[in-house]
Length: 294
Image (cartoon, rainbow, N blue to C red):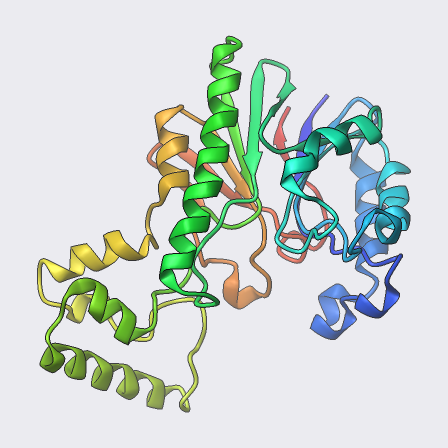
């Protein structure tokens, strides 16, 4: 009996116009790669956690063929909510668990059990320069509160061994835009001008393009103590999610969401402060579920 994880299947059997082929060769017929790899290693007694972005379907009817695909595969399936899972209203998770009882367990504001481990999870959130930093903070707080609720419930029931599952990476992958970061740091107009000039010089080295994934200016060029303050504000090295994992002594943090080789190192990977961080997005694993525990 083993525990496996894989994220981001992005199934689209019910909405074929949303297939993932346009995102590169790795996504061509990815459903068949997932099926073949799954059947090769997963047994009925195993557990597989799917770490979000399960289906492009906007409602249960559009998702039905995708759920049928997953249901037909061997093993116990635990499902986590991703940012594209429009069918899943977090307020109605209990209804989903009742409706799919015996087929899937939907992990949200609750916890699952694997041997003597409590599996706690939530969608999470990180800053990707897609919304304001204030809005990011609001969603981050909501999701971290949900994770705490799940960990507290498991601990109250006597569990002392934890694995944390997120859809989003546990730390942010981008800094806020330079003007917003400078305002947050309280920099003078002259200091902001210097940093924005540095940003433009770096961009010019890359043909005027943000190379993606990381700051376009060098944090080490910031004066002290602004360097440390910037790292604290932007949370590219830690976050409420990593802090919760450390507080509860989680052994591993598993996450998805990061796509394309240029984004596979947007967040923590490997052992950090005694916790093993793993990225399990589908294309990162070439759609081969990764063993998490025996």
